Amino acid sequence: MRVTLADPSALIPGFERTHREQSALYPYRPAGRQPVHTVYVPADRFDAGTVRAWGDAALELFGRHLPEGELAAILAPVLAPAPGTGPGTAFGSAAVSGAVPGAAADLAGAVHARVAAKLEREPVEDLRIDFEDGYGVRPGEEDGHASAAAEAVAAMYADGTLPGRWGLRVKSFADGDPLRAVRTLDGLLTGVVERAGFLPEGFVVTFPKVLMRDYLHQFADCLEALEDGLGLGRGRLRFEIQVEAPQTVRFLDAELVTSLEGRLSAAHFGVFDYTASCGLPPHEQRLDHPACDHARHVMQTVFAGTGVELSDGSLAAAPASDDGHAVRDLWRRHAALVGHSLAHGFFQGWDMHPSHLVSRYAAVYAFHLSRYDEYTGRVRAWEERRDAGGGVMDEPATVRTMAAALRRADLALGDTPSPGPA
Image 1 (cartoon, rainbow, N blue to C red):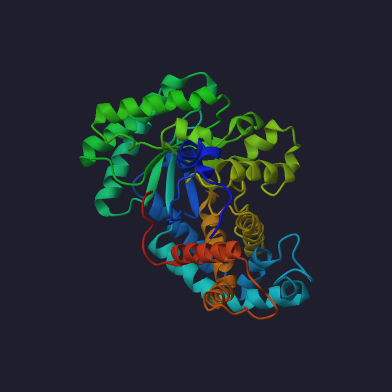
Image 2 (cartoon, rainbow, N blue to C red):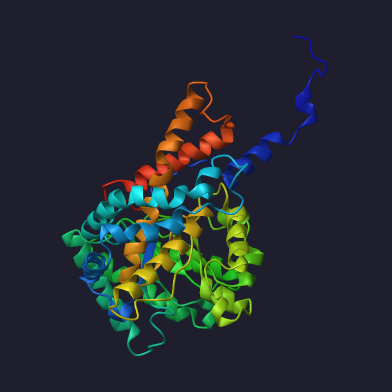
């Protein structure tokens, strides 16, 4: 082949350096299993039986208030078309024409059985012992609760009930007392290592209300010192940032990940602090408010390709009574919010009450099962170089997305316990 340029490499002398920077900022990592939720339990209410107690409470509510025939109504909002779908949009017209209620009814049996089995087998995938908002300020008690939590974690590990991901949420540096946060983290970690003989896999610490970027690097330095003091491998202690204020959104960028040398494992959205910081009225402090959608989209944009996981926030509501209608109304509301998160690419969220486990798993299973066969057929058609039917011609990027969705579904629907972070 004849070419015009004799030496095009001379035109791009900085390519190797730029490509190395790209690889550092956006490393390719095959998606592993991400927990579908994080359960927050105040430290003063946590013990070795907490996970099983949550599972038992959820099972009791599930068995009493959610027969299979009632499940379709709870699943319907999860399967409703996202904004922008509908006639004229690929694969949207069926949902608009009335297929959603039918799809929910068709899935109800499979989802009902999966939820019952999950609550029995592994009710909590990711556990966080909370020493922050859910715990409060207890200057004379926090040391004792940290020691008790360490003892409980070691006991759970010994009897096989410790979730695949676990950890604690410390107090915020923004509160003006970083030494309290570090002391509690130190005491819990030291207690676990002394009792178990090592630090069980899956540990992560949640770092809340980060109003200044420097707090992240200061906290990372504390983690490094703890690794040295406890004889842990470098980089063993990782943390997740909570995005709870507009100030935090303004300093997020991909360079933050590399500057923290791999310690940043996830970014979790805090809906109530965030909406309060934005000045929204109390009745608008909701997960699906447009202000929250904006913040989450910024998080997606910043952390895309970096390997940092994303998690959504929570519903601050629990059953107000034992009335079945009230409990199912709560489940419908929560499932709809979980569906909103899933449709926007947030596959994890917070659960704050045992009742949330029911609607969380129901929504997650319905979401993944509803498109599984369709995605499988379209990926197979693309691999076989034929159209997927209905005039659809999938782009390679769409096929990659569907293949990733199938992998995520296989992991979320699987029967093996959640592993710790890779």
